[in-house]
Image 1 (cartoon, rainbow over the protein chains, first blue to last red):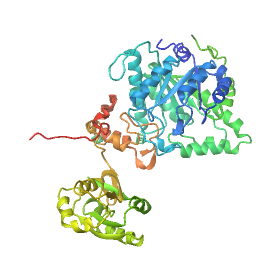
Image 2: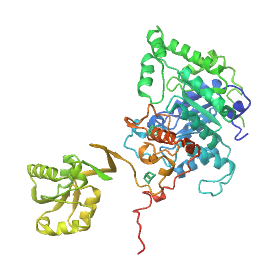
Image 3: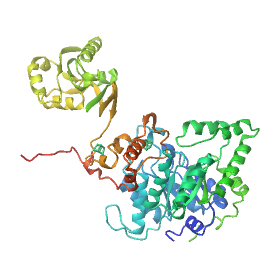
Image 4: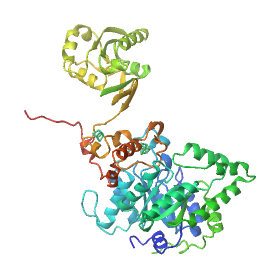
Length: 310
Length: 217
Ligand code: SF4
Ligand code: SF4
């Protein structure tokens, strides 16, 4: 065990993991996070708190993770390199561990130009792959980047993301390999809609034996309206929503029900693919659908039902 | 390589010289002439705008290359008109403006924003190629700069937003990392990217005050 988190235990024991994502509020209310925790607790092995996702200022990921923990939900702290340099990033890792947060997911982050402060200076002191390596070095060597020693234990379960739907397609697997080499223990993928492409990608992953070196959680993002599908297809870089899905939502009498059905079909397909070790549900703004998804997908009960192991 | 400039909004220019009534105008015969931001035509257009706005222009000149030390002589020849002015409004790039300021005690105000140092890739199309980071990695990236050409300055790209060769930040901009991969693939050296590029030493970049090199004689 590298960190002994619930997520690590579920994944290393070979069980199909379920994680979810919770967006912290654009404000100061702890209640918002607590309510999400209440909903998600019995249905997920761990919950990600996003780090100023899409470069929009929100409550910090670290604070959100502490609030989750207080509700007995295991947090995954997302950490982007867009806003903090190496001094701040390492400092926040120490603080997170001190507060009992041991799952950290490394991202570069959406460009600040997408967010609500487009005039901000992007930091990008390092990229996500470099951050993964920094965390691994902190854990395994107990060293800061500068080579000085860290006092105390540094238990970390290190996550990263990969987008099988971005270009260049072949290089996407190389990049996954690089993340594994850097030290990623688990990977969350971009939302999967295009099953043909995802299946092809997973084949390339398993051909290279990468699924034996890292736990891959396929991203699932339930869509509740045709407009949302079109928006994601046209405006979110790196998300592929096939026409068949958009059409089904357009034709449906009840788009939400159809959206749930589509999500369940995607999960069913994903579960048949060799090398996929779990799903990561990104129902940002529609967290209340997660219990339905998890139970209808037959993924209940969760192994260590919501309890954070001591 | 040339300095790429853009005119500041005229209101901003007026605001910067709001205390001054008499203005001396300087243009540059090199980069800002090529780009039509600070050559003779633009200097004369500025003169007219200033006069319409109620200012008095005591004189003007276009220095052949404002960032050159010869600027000192050019200013000396026009001392009388410069001395008659409250301030100088400068239309070279920032390097030219800095050079002018070396040789005059008059306040100097920029009329242009200097955006980057770049190349004219095709007629009228100027793009940035290098930010002079002080630790060149071009040898590892098929001579395409990842710091300048990637919107997130990734050292191990591309990010998950690279689609059809375009950057997620601006669909009209090529993804620098797609270019790096294409060029390395063509050279049969894509495996160069298997190595993880270590953290960059930014201390050689814009991190510690002005950078300086003194050549030993
Ligand atoms: S790596 Fe640095 S020096 Fe080399 S081209 Fe890029 S910015 Fe310029
Ligand atoms: S799309 Fe390409 S150029 Fe744009 S930020 Fe991503 S890697 Fe960099």
